[in-house]
Length: 527
Image (cartoon, rainbow, N blue to C red; front, side, top):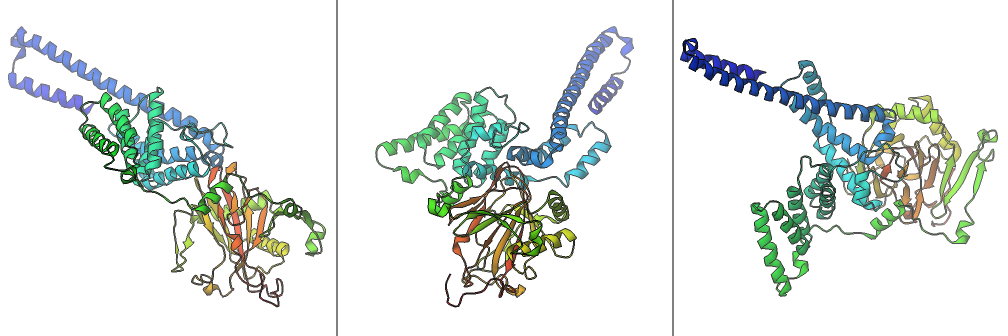
């Protein structure tokens, strides 16, 4: 309306300058044409406002349906990585675009409310983090881009989002920023495929996608493919200067390649990430392919009840114990925590959750790391009865002294949350990370699963070839040290990326001090 008012003001000012239109019909007929132009301009303004309001209305309806469905099971909804990615994208970018759209003609209350809330929205770093998680899930679980784009993941419900060509393009751009040309190619190709299949174009067009696609292929040494996509780009936009230059460049190097003046190795300029054997085993175990046990070893695994011979409390309520693995020995305890106890632990931990840290093996200092994607909180004994109850139960079941144990750590894994292979104990060649505690090394680990995970999220032992899957209310236990006090290197383990779902765990690390008469050292140095 401001534009119309300004236009009317200009018109009135210019009319005043001409003076006395009424003295000439000729002058007045000119005014009729001017008024008609003004009406046309006013209609354009109204149409523009209606279009804007229609966009906003459509966006609000879509978001209302989505948020209403999502809020019924927030963790289940965000447990699907595609949903989490799109949430981050909406809050870090699209709500800002909406703000710009309505800023010129909307109530001050809405703008003030949105502006204040946007201060607490995720930013581009969050969006990039979720995008990297999707790429990690893609590699670990051998998912193709089409499956991820459709949101059709193992264990997922019907309530899931899909990735548009724009979303695929955004994923590819994150990979490109990391010079990950392999994933750049995969997701640019997926974006292009969806446009070719008739998806309405959004913010990104085929020309832009083809430009990045040919570049990523070139960086991987795929010169012929890069040339083909460049030719396709020029068919869509013959005036594209960079594509014209690239075309000549690719043809020049292909000719040298055919003449033997260059080799394919000299053209492979992309960053190559070494595929280590441990990483192969880690991803294989995460996909559920554990090492095969011999029948003899398998026959030594049992299920049993922990009765009164271990602790008087178990006379009335024996604990169900199951052997998960033999070397190293990994034991699972079933029905070890109730839903009410788990809910209370989550309630205590949620306000304190912070990004999980790792300890640098050289400096001994804690820091954030991209290979540990989770948040954790520490719950001290005596701060709530349920924490004391958990500690007492751990001591009763394991027979170890928990007075020297570390605090109970509650962790929640984010989108694609993982913790790559590591040891829980302190090795001899590392700075003593536990010296300040004065309780010795971590003798054992107790890991309580506080949620079921629809897909992914296993605890895997890369050296032993074992995989333990989350089951709510159960806990697994293993010794990190041999009876001699030496580290058991077979306990190297990892937490696999969560593919679908939300993974909550609580763990307690028990230390050597206090275990002298509970787990005796052998007379001779041995393992």
